[in-house]
Image (cartoon, rainbow, N blue to C red; front, side):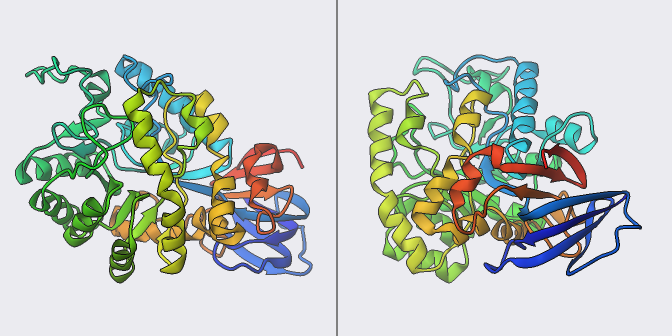
Length: 419
């Protein structure tokens, strides 16, 4: 099927200047041509007049947890089939907010991804990590209390039994856990290398996994053509990860100048994940200890922002989107407002489009969607795009309201059209 979008202003995902008076030719699920001026409409089965609106690549959220679906408390006990249904609903709602691609940062998402790719349900393209890997007494050890024990049958935690996280405590265990995720089709590997806000038994400043364990994960991932992403906040954790070869650091709010220089020197990516805003914290049942950890992280955001800008660090947009669909609906798009305030309109928009494309190049032949490009609007890109009311290069807050998305297209298929 050939489609034409005419009379549009195109943001290609990389360059700040819009291509004015442009048209986009789509054949099946790929962009065939982007040109300017007049074009004959005779050969097209569908013609859309954008009315001189801005067209951008479909948005990319580079840090989500579609299968972490508890109702405001991730320890809520859910069966595996209930988790899958909720994850599928999260994916559908994510697409209808304009996110045509996501990088899932931990969760058993194999079945949901397969159903989306095979057309059984709708949702974004998923770059899956599958189970996040961490150590005993680390951020992803979600046993509910000190009386809990690991048993032969499994974990005393429904989140862990459902495959969201897996524990590994030696280089050999880590290596096996990585290979298990690669067997399931992981496009990258997720490690937990430091304390977290929502976990009960590890302080924020704990340093998790030894250099040997991290190195085993990095080597196993490299052997299969891909890279490791890691959850962490502190400089000791970040520097250990960088030295071991981790290529994408998630959160990183407590970075200092030395760490920023190491990130720059090694070309490592940063996903700041600013989802933990003060209003979002009200939706969780956090203990006083967790709120104290949140305050430590929040206070680091200003310096983190300054260092990312000063050193021109590789950065992508990510929200840490998780839990129920109501929370995600309320908060996922709001993070564009945070990126606008911290980094400006253009950098914020590019971090959710062309820069994510650049990050995904690290997957090499593990890329689950090699037939086209994501995050870009150019010849050979997937026909994943939004037609907007308003110009996000002038005001990124345009993206905080999904009603401004007049058209949502993924893979050449229209999921929304209110032109």
